[in-house]
Image (cartoon, rainbow, N blue to C red):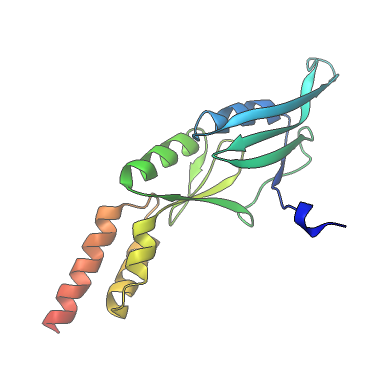
Length: 168
């Protein structure tokens, strides 16, 4: 066995909609492609359905299986985090992925296929790690009240905590 050839790759199980999901995701992320779809004869009304495949999202390759309805359901136990440089990126990925899905809390959402995503600005990590623990806690508390993370609101929470700490 050669350790150098070992690699870990996500494999997703879809309920009858692998090809549609691959098209949805590759339409959102840059540097993305549908790399392979293997078609097999389907049942009535599903001729030549894509049963297995690979697609790449911004350089990360996913394998996928189409198990048909009722076989698998995604849960929040596994999610993919998108680290965004600014609010416009947060808004783009949030709006694109939540379309047909549902919002959750603290930057989490489920897309139309039930896959969980975390759309997180890098500024959140910076503010939570502030050397002033009062500011870090204030930012953490602000995130707990958000669905989509809003950078300006995080910065306002940090400023207010700094002002409150200086006044106290």
